[in-house]
Length: 312
Image 1 (cartoon, rainbow, N blue to C red):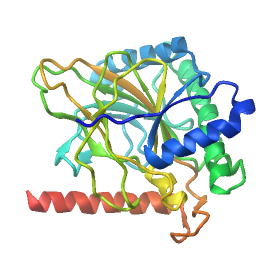
Image 2 (cartoon, helix red, strand yellow):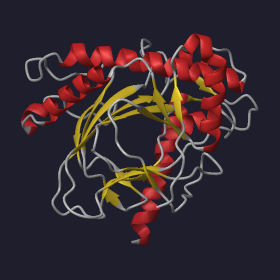
Image 3 (cartoon, rainbow, N blue to C red):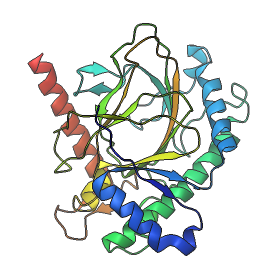
Image 4 (cartoon, rainbow, N blue to C red):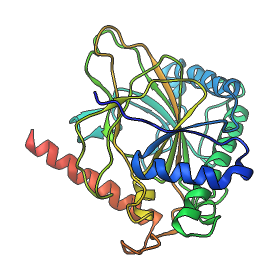
């Protein structure tokens, strides 16, 4: 494993320090593709409360979780293991997850008390953090300060932004296997919350082009801590920045020795509005809507999947 620096950036006194914070964010996004946010406005208690809600949901019987079924058309709802094939490993991810949008079906509060109230509040705070970070990138790229805020407004019916609650079940024989194969995120910007001691996340260097499947072969473990938010640039923002900001590969790997305990994580995917037009300031790539970008990315991933299948 190669050790790499993942910059830690404080958002304290954001309005007063915005210029300095912008420089730090851009430097991290250009060179690391990953950074960690602290002093971001979500307390450790609030994060632990959301994880408690998540654990309660995943502890339910399958038929109760299945009351919020996964819908392939919207990618919302509960999915179990077989929904994500990774070309990098030729296998399916060993996990379950619950995808949520503000206007999607949600678990019943009778099954998980305070689910909607707690999760709505958590998503609102994630949105506020994302708006701040994306406003910095908008300024650095030469867009109006609110460019990404308008493009990524969850109150609009065509917004694709989602929260994902994730559970990697414990395994006695998971040594060296994949819990989530190497991949990049299709969307704009991802906020990832982890729980203390539930390690497994590993990150990899960036790519030369947003459309390349090439990967570096050296990964760095990123220990899990409750509180700091791990942030990574997605493919969409890489394209939107004319490849200035880097979308990097990452994966979740089981322990090299011994039993791998359950791992819980929470990801807030800023994926923008389906009908919003995406093009960088230098116009390196032709304009496309966010919806078109997603469709092309999915088709490219499917083609890669077919290539892997044909080669095995």
